[in-house]
Length: 333
Length: 202
Image (cartoon, rainbow over all chains, first blue to last red; front, top):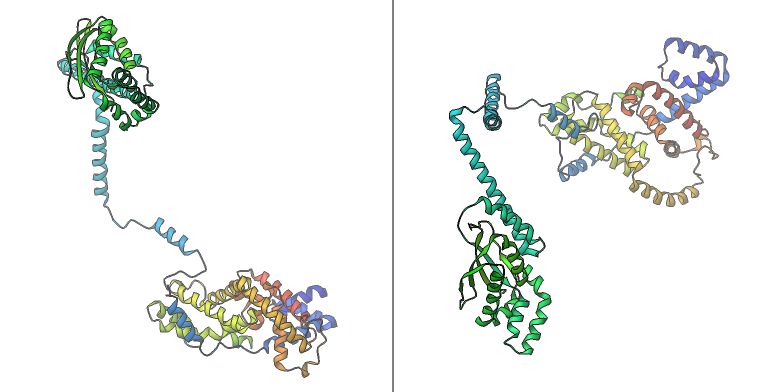
């Protein structure tokens, strides 16, 4: 055996952990090699020195001090030791593989599953079966009635859609009025209620000014003109405080001016004014009859004159080729 | 000597009995367990840290960790192996801590003056030592301790466990989480390095 190999093994040799064969080989080498024998001697001396080191003992108050720390630190003796799997992982693992605490018998579990299945079939699958079932002739009438009901519902839905689209007109005047009118025509051909169309109009502030200027001084007119630029925002936001000032100045005479313009419009489209109610309060109502094909044009013209607060085209009464309308005129305040 | 040291643990009763008593709620059993291992753990910490106060802190921290974890101890390894693994890891963590490094840096600046006054130099292997017989025992111990302290952490660990605390190769393999062959080769190399550092003494 070579010296380098023996020197590597000397540490194990001195600790007596070499197997017998290696031990014998090392011993044989040591008998003939002074260098390795010296190395062994120095290793023994080293160990003697190391072993002679004093055993340093813990201070006398070690346990007392430790107990104080344990009391102060609110010990948690339930924690896992810091070897092996981490406690958090172990806890998670135990939770995942933990058997259910509530034990269910197979019979009960089966019954529960069946119940759920039945509920599922009744509540979820049943309606689609009803649609696909072949209808016997005796029940045909009932089904037809049901279908008619559905059609009526569909129409109601469309009407609701109309309401929504109309409300957009009020908000920003951005939806073309003609579009809304086309829908109204469709509805009018299917619904035969004889209720007049009710239009609620807000008189535009500039129209008020126009009307007002005919009877007021220039000074007041200037004040009103200043407010025109703000009108759109004021109306859209529903804050009508500015416009209210103008509206308050509006007298009966002015309302008559606007009302007479509406009456003229109705007549220009070939319609008849049935009645005009002038009120001391804010609302003035004009009832009129107008050819159905002129209705949309009338609305456009009214839109120029005023703002729609409530177009309400949901129910349109028809009598032959004419429509009955009722226009409520409200000053914009 | 080594065999005697190995029998130190459990002087105040069988470890397993004491641990089970503790796990059953007898908190005083921990004190008896502590008495059986306290000095050995302290000595290990001292040889690792080369500082009494640091050793005290590490030993206390070790037993605090043991106290907190003892209820979960499942006897899958020997208590002794587990305890000394905690102690070694506590010391290693402490050596790496910024607090310890700052403290040692401050300490060494003052220490150098003292060493110069006593004609010591930093490198033990290179200094011209007086004959061993002339050296005070305390001085010899201080030199050996300095030599141990100057070893790389891995070598220091194995020297302390084997040559100072007398753990078997198998126990060291368990404590350090190394293969037996690795322990053998590391120990041989560490002894060679330390022997070289203590050349003047041997």
